Length: 153
Image 1: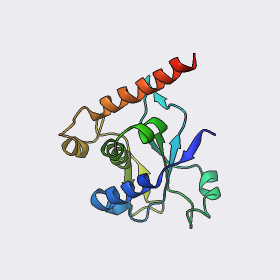
Image 2 (image 1 turned 90 degrees about the vertical axis):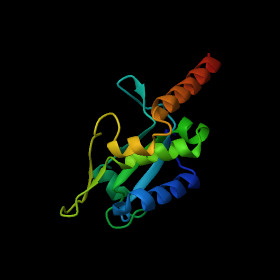
Image 3 (image 1 turned 120 degrees about the horizontal axis):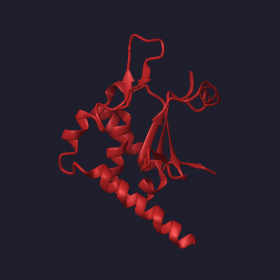
């Protein structure tokens, strides 16, 4: 299977982050999944990714997320979840949640937006203690994947 459920600690972190930084997401229904397959984009490892579910997935998830199903699906890299500390996981969660734009005047108020630059301006200040965190974590996770690949051959 390509995906698995996240541990409860991820949901707890999300609730804490939502309360502190994203109160407008109070009613957003987000499905968190671990991607067991390495996610790549433009030759770089992807630590997390948030997407809008298709109409079919929304329909199929209507019993788990009442009303119209999930508003978003967030995928987290398996190595991130199982090998990185809570602060780095929270940085990824916060970063991915910044992609959400809430338009209260819209029938479907939950939208996705792109980065302000390679990150988000709000995240720069929050990560001033470790401004290179994303590269550090990506390197660590890449090394874990490489070691596993070497062990398999």
